[in-house]
Length: 90
Image 1 (cartoon, one colour):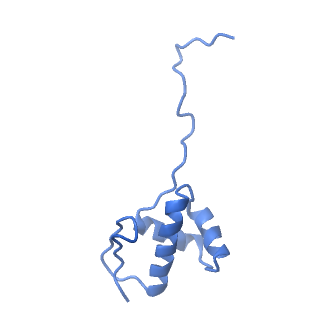
Image 2 (cartoon, rainbow, N blue to C red; image 1 turned 90 degrees about the vertical axis):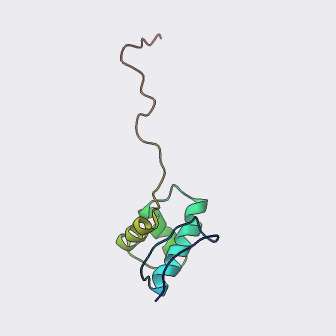
């Protein structure tokens, strides 16, 4: 149907190939939401899309996020772990 390439309207995502009009609309909606909530992963994005009236599977959301290069940002576990030789005084 059309090639997906956003410049000024999105965050500079470009993809060569054909994307259906429905997928293009989903990708644009997901891009706008990701700018507001970059911590949404595929599960949360699927729930948001359902609330917006767009019923899609999580696998489809995962695939589109992967194509667009979107990844949820979150804190990894135990990032501020003290070194074992550091004494803790109580």
